[in-house]
Structures are given as C-alpha cells and as structure tokens.
Length: 175
Image (cartoon, rainbow, N blue to C red):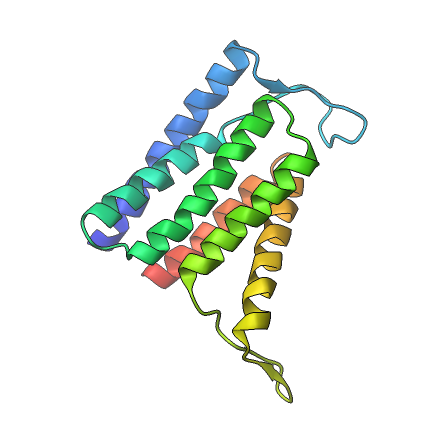
C-alpha cells in the first residue's frame, strides 16, 4: 500500500496546481482564443499541463538523485521535458510548425538514442529485428503520437481524459 502514497500525493498536488494555474491564466488572460479550426467556442485558459510537467520533472530528479531512476531513462525524459517546454511556449505564442516539428524530431531522436535498443516487432510470419529500422520507426512513432496528442489537446477534455486513462492503466502495473 505504501507504493500508492507517492502517486496519490503527486495526483493531489497536480490537481491543486492545475487549478491554481488555471485561475492564474484566467486572471492574467493567458487564453486560447478560438479560431475557425478550434473545437471550443469560448476563450480557454492554457498552461495547466505545466503543473503535471513540473511534478513529473521534480519526481524524475528526485528518483534520479536517489539512484532509483536509471541514467538512460532520466536522459530520455529530458527530451520529453524539452517538448513540454516548447509546448508551453507554443501556448503563450504560437510557434510555426517549421520550427516546432524539427525540434520534436530532435527530441524524439534524443530520447530513442538514450533508451537504447527497441524491442523487435513480431507480425507472426515476419518480424523486424534490425535496429536500423526499429529506431527510426520509434522516432516516427514518438513524433506522430506527440502531434496526435497535441491535436487532441485542442479538443476540450479529450487530452485530459486520455491522461487519466493512461495513468490508471499505469497504476494497475505499479500495484
């Protein structure tokens, strides 16, 4: 049961911090104003995900410092934090795709390189074992999933719902 204390604490703190960041964004008018392609019709506060990223980063630094988190995983996470920072800046001031996508690709390459070998993919009759194929596929998959999630983030509630579902499934594996 003690293995649930930290995740539960992080969850409670992230809910509180997200609420505080939302209130701050509303107060100082850091809002996503809807355009023709927007899924929402009213100005919506942005930047609430920063609370989750900050807690994730704090947890990663803590577990890295105490030796629980391996160096390679910590370094791979740095790529994710670069992407999160870029996303926060993009929320504040739109970053053109010609800059954003190459940075996403660079961060994905960084993370995949630090994670090392990618597990083979077995299709039954055929399997892919070559790291020359698997690692670029992993980079493409990361960039694709990142942009898919970013797209869903523009649809109110979907990205948050996905985050809750993924974390509940992750919790299942922790227990």
